[in-house]
Length: 272
Ligand code: 2HA
Ligand code: ZN
Image (cartoon, rainbow, N blue to C red; front, side):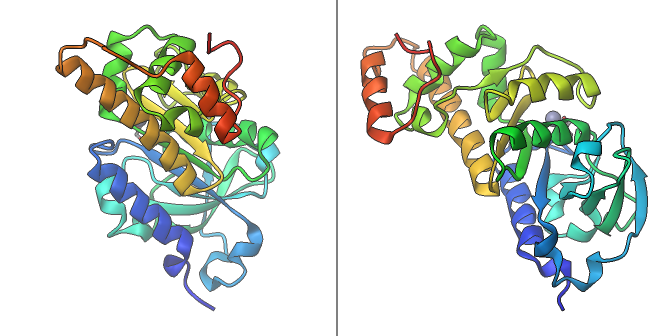
């Protein structure tokens, strides 16, 4: 029997939150991560068997009852989680009635799940319909991407096409494109619903003037998706700094050839 603090799950989330901070994408308490853990993966950990506390949540998670999530705490700094995982992370199980979670491990100074937990749960619920292996929802504040939400039209097709043309890798990593919601107040059920509705068609959703949500089967996949979108936004930003004049770019035919070669299907209607 081992302690959950030594599990690969706690290590992975501790490391990725520090890396998100180190990128400058999670200032102060910005950002949140939730990671679905399978009950059988918890069998060997002696300290996750008893309910430590019950915490009400502002969302009806009945459809997710019994599921376990390792979740960053509200108000905590991503730079600190790596040093205080048992304080700033919690392993929670969605209670039977869906209106609360049972704390099984962590949050040891009285913390609670992220303010964006309803959005995370709605996001998991939606993505699970499309991918039964869905496990991670990740939110952060990537700098160049946020800047582009001021200067570019908030149009999914237009922004996706810019990102696809900024680097060859983009189309391969997010052939479905990027979803965008209007600016909304964070931490609400409404922003959760809007985000989840976009996750029906996209694995990433941009929150204008705020940040991005990325999803995936693994921490690496969710992070890699966000990283690739932010890299495209960074290249776009540097192009503007170099004067903004485009001498040549990847053509639509080039992107179609790329998609064929990598066996991915670009979002219908996004290429001419
Ligand atoms: O967790 O980033 O959107 C703090 C936030 C809220
Ligand atoms: Zn945020």
